[in-house]
Amino acid sequence: MGKRAFIFPGQGSQYIGMAKDLFENSVEAKEMILTAEETIGVKISHIMFNGPEESLKQTDITQPAIFLHSVILASIIRTLDFDMTAGHSLGEYSALVASKAIQFYDAVKLVRVRGEAMLQAGIEWKGTMAAVVGLEPDIVKEVCEVASKEGVVQCANFNSPGQIVISGSVEGVKTAMILAKEKGAKLVKELVVSGAFHSPLMESARERLKQELDKTNIYDAKYPVYANVTAKPVQSKDEIIKLLDQQLTKPVLWEETIQNMINDGVDEFYEIGPGKVLQGLVKRINPDVKVFGIDKYTDVEKYL
Image 1 (cartoon, helix red, strand yellow):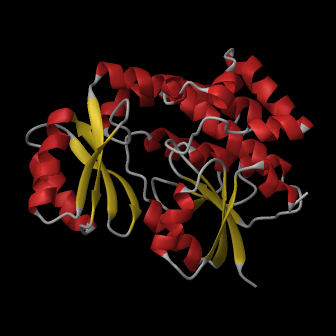
Image 2 (cartoon, helix red, strand yellow):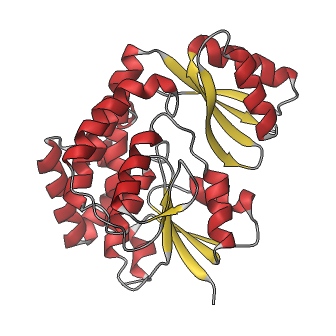
Image 3 (cartoon, helix red, strand yellow):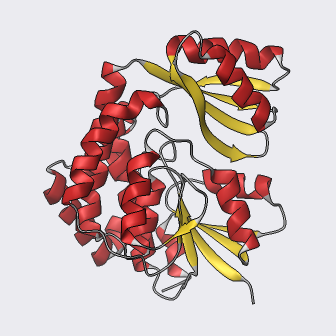
């Protein structure tokens, strides 16, 4: 019998109207949203349900919004069990809540601080990110090394075969984009982001988040969580804290994470949260595994 994994999306999966049907159809969802709003002191549901897009795209709003949507879904699908879990960047926090390593209430605060700290770091250290499609990881790493003479730049997300995101200073990334095209990349595209996530330019955000992590109750996880930084399963609370601390400045090893989960017996992946980004990545990593998405209330109803 194969195993089942829950995977949780990160930034970029938000959309206007997200979680509105959950709020309207589930008492539990409604209570979780109201609790979160009380905790962070922002009426986030208004922006999630109605926009404007500009506000929803702000990192300090996007992160709690996606986290909330994901964690609510994981909480209300009663009959669906899972064996292990992972989340893409921000999604790692949703995975840790689902695995009982962090309580919902505490995680909301952490995610809000993470979003604010990353937004602030992006203002202090102007940076950008770009997607590079169609090059081997080694070539992209080499490109970043050469380009880093012009400014900070490194691989930030190894998403799926031939899809890598680079991150760093504007000069560094722009130089790497030119070099990547010269090396024959199929597509090189700058992303609309408010900072150089998963690069050394997030160091100030990392420091602020670390202070918050040190104040937070974190427990051993009940289920293995495959960490972004190592792509390996983790359950001990000390290890979880250490890896969350490193996560902001280190690359997200997503392709390797999914590969490792498959090697460990997973043949069904459920993306829990807004959008379909991770479903697409998993299919590119391995077309043979089954992939499902749970996003809307109609998706949840099958499992109540």
